[in-house]
Amino acid sequence: MKNEELKGIIDWYDFQKRYGFILTNEKKYFFHQDDLDSIEYKPKKNDEVIFFPIKTKKGLRAKRVKFVKQFINDNNTLKQFINDNNTYCRACKKKMTPRLVTYKGSPDKSFCPHCGKIHMTFFNFQKTIEITVIIIFFSLVLLYFFNK
Image (cartoon, rainbow, N blue to C red; front, side):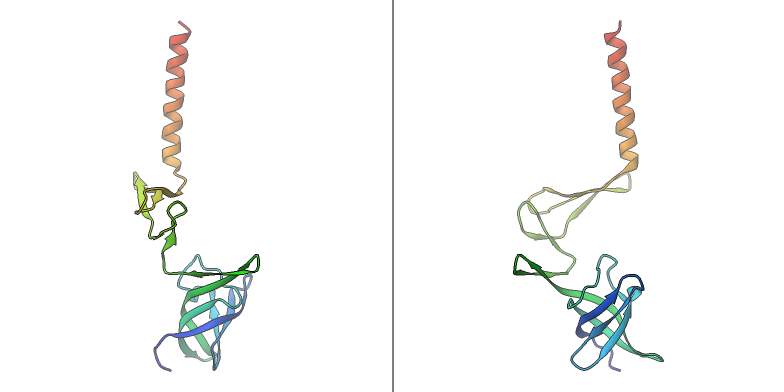
């Protein structure tokens, strides 16, 4: 079998069993959740994917399955989403790759490189503890001075 990418659509996928099948013009290929290139991608029927075909003892299998297009019916309009590791800023609506800000080695937030607006805030337990300790400290200082 040639080592080149094929394009196909998801025929069906079982979330509990974590496997499904991809249809091409000619054949049907088995794939497992471990064969997906992205852990965020949740396969749905008729999603367009690209993959590398291999031949196994049990039959044809798709490896390194990458999500290409998804069609979502929303109020009788079709929206097309392309997965290319980019997203769109909610503020300026431009296509972007979010920039990550860390706090003491842990992700803190990501922001749009075009407009600077915060794209996503991550929960940071260490930062939360530090802020809580500071608030408690200043509350105790204020209580001490007001109770004199």
